Length: 234
Ligand SMILES: Nc1ncnc2c1ncn2[C@@H]1O[C@H](COP(=O)(O)OP(=O)(O)OP(=O)(O)O)[C@@H](O)[C@H]1O
Picture (spheres, rainbow, N blue to C red):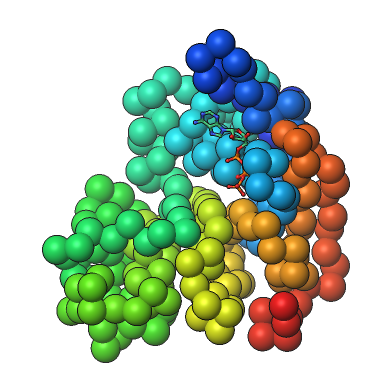
């Protein structure tokens, strides 16, 4: 398997007035192409910090991050902006859709700037929203809005799909449907997905589980018996 991502001794310190907060205290891991990775850990462990550095939304204080053989930690703001725009699809807990654009327009708005983007209608169909493309966010349920947000991220045809607690605002069944969608997209499109959660129960759906504790990697588990989301209960 080809390696896609490498974190090497990555540190991150935030300064809050006089008090420095060490969010990452030397983080090392690798991720391969096409992998579905779950980053697990308690609140404040450093999960979102890892995801934000990987997505070029935040910068490391020390260490090195390589994506596709390029060192993103050596890039300037302009290079990172381009990387975020072209290579990264983000899905957050809250959907951040533009309220006065319908579902189709929300997806098209995001893909406009991407060279290799996919067809917005095709992707909305793939996420099961064919009948809802003309609906505005306020006319969609939470689960449907998250599907639009996933379609928006996927239609960019990004190198990486990064998800930060994507089911955090959804009920059990809807959350499960969203996880199934992410798992299907990973399998069908062979897209690398990195998902941050505190829900240990969903770990069996991943190829790799990275456990984070107090800004450090506690363990990296290769899961050879990956399960379909449908067969996991929590
Ligand atoms: N912008 C920031 N400024 C100051 N401190 C921050 C900032 N972002 C994160 N931190 C701190 O860094 C540590 C790690 O935060 P992070 O958000 O990565 O944790 P997390 O594991 O994602 O937690 P949660 O599950 O609660 O989102 C925490 O102590 C947090 O308070």
